[in-house]
Length: 156
Image 1 (cartoon, helix red, strand yellow):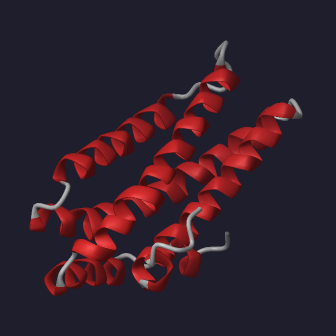
Image 2: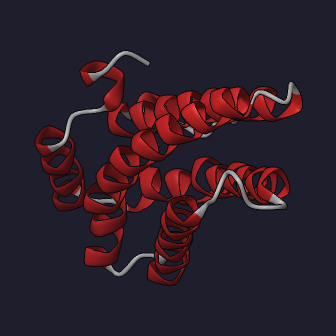
């Protein structure tokens, strides 16, 4: 992940990026469980990922995404990312661990999650740094105050 665009200097973005690191770590736990043939461990990690992802997405969409859409900046990119959020939620909730192809489906979903995180970290977050105005950052701050990071509210 990039460290030279300035995103890490903006606390709300740095926090979202830190959440991304945790999400990717939990995704790694899912992969390791699948690789080891430990379905219960993989399913447990997947449930944890789903919970954390839900909290993270809510903060992103109510904060940075809402602020960018309010300003009209890159709304098409934000809409695309929000659609991906919906897709992840739907796919995670419909997974059936006993189904044939479960592991392949999960691995594909995790690969897409990684690509999605890159789009945010390397795309929309750097754009937010240079495009959001004071009102936009107020929207972000309000959203983050209303829903604190899972980094501070739960054991990760």
